[in-house]
Length: 480
Length: 103
Image 1 (cartoon, chains in turn cyan, brown):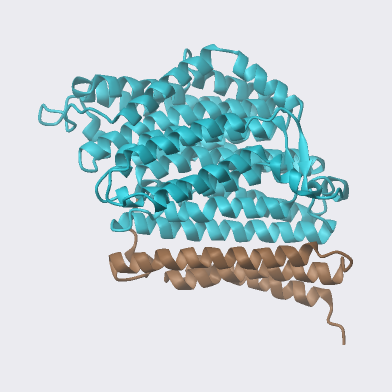
Image 2 (image 1 turned 120 degrees about the vertical axis):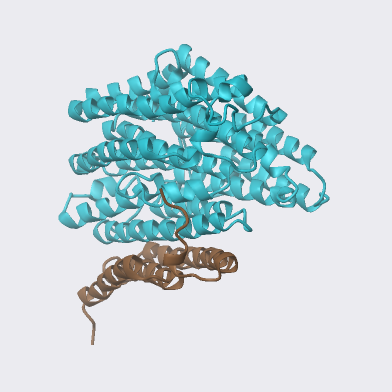
């Protein structure tokens, strides 16, 4: 154990800069007039986040605080992706936050969101299970407050209650699993545990509990029951955050722990992950077809996407990690674009989120329709867009490790998912509105939403056509 | 008289499964919360016992227990705040009455 001195704290670039943003936002919120619109406050937060995205990148591997905190180039790039996704969500939330009944609470929204992000950063960089657990909880406790943020709408409160209870249940399972690992190994440092694991039945049991706990956080089938209700009840911006950022962070953290802490038990966990992945993709796809509400529909879509994401963990190789980070980056831009459109339409039509309201949207709002279509094509994996390449890489990584049956089932499910993504596209372009008029009048979205959608569309095309990003990820993942 | 380590572990295991059972069967949000607390505390007992009996030289398990207690207190505070909010909106915290969201 090396000595800890204060200069070590300065090497926590990502976390430290995020704390600075958090404190500045908190103080600015204190000195702000609560009834004012807060446009400058929102602009300031977005600018600070934009700077923060760049500060996350650190090219070297660091181990601090006696091995409690480990930062690698790969986790730093994942942190950067998560920060960029958070920035996109902040951009699209401007309209909702500027509303008369939420504007005095916008500071709280930012501070809570940034604290969950801070928790995810520590979870990604943890070198000890205590750090991992604290990070996980720092990410999920403020998340419950965010879900229950619209406190006069009882759907929001109901979603909050469901979220906090299922999140506590999953943490309890995870904590019990960790206690058994501690009992059999005598330590919880990521560096020491692999040498002490023997794969005894007790350790297998604790591994299953650990995966179950993380499965709840990522909403994999059969731990997905809270997802649809929470996604529907939460404010739309929070749903977007929940579906991309917390899911992505939990997936990468799970992959890192499985690969580096449990390498000896790979046969055990790979089988569990394969079953969870196939179950998530299949069940969620079948459920998604039945949904008429866009937010519930996106909830099931995100469960099935989580199934694809864990395929990267299944491979357990550098290629798997790189393809997983790439998949998450692409998934972030596509899903954020979808939620930006859903939330804009919800704000302008007094809370309409049903798919039937999107009929004939093409005639009234061609540009919103185009952005939504591109994002759905990418989620479905249609070639020119990034979603195709991300699915391709993640399938290739799993296939190389011999999981061809899983890849085959996932591939079949891609076709099913195309069907329901195209249902929305069909409603927007081809279906005739009920009484000859689209439920959504022509609307002009806020500048933040337009910027967010433009960035997302550029991202969808650029990530797909520019190969340097994936190659960089691959290099960083191999250096891990 | 020294109590065998297995006895403590049995208590913890019974607490865990009682908690799981309660979580799935109770129809009141507060009772559900109590069940989850049972599960969290089962894990905390495990940590403390393993540390005391198997690895007495270091304090890792005790620290984990302390952090676990602090974190579960924070979770409980948030959960109860949300439940109060549910009660204000619905005037009830029976889980049967808060099922507006379903597909």
